[in-house]
Length: 69
Image (tube, rainbow, N blue to C red; front, side, top):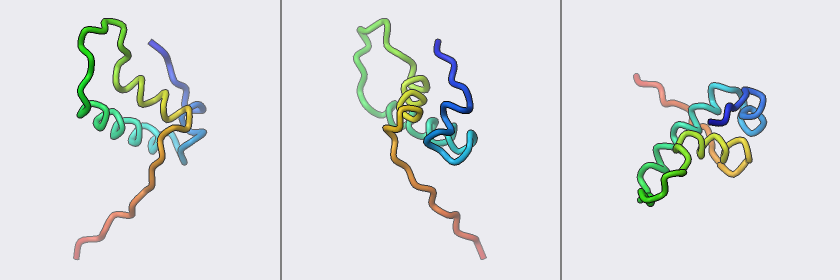
């Protein structure tokens, strides 16, 4: 299992908390796609999403939250 440092993931995100949120949302998106279950050496979805984020392959934007009145 690969260990990601905060410095690795914050290169393409504003801070480490935002990086983890983006990677978690991307892992949920990856989970919706069909996977080949016959591969035994397949990486976990969270690992794949953190690799994509630290490689700069995920584009995201922060949408401000609307205030309820």
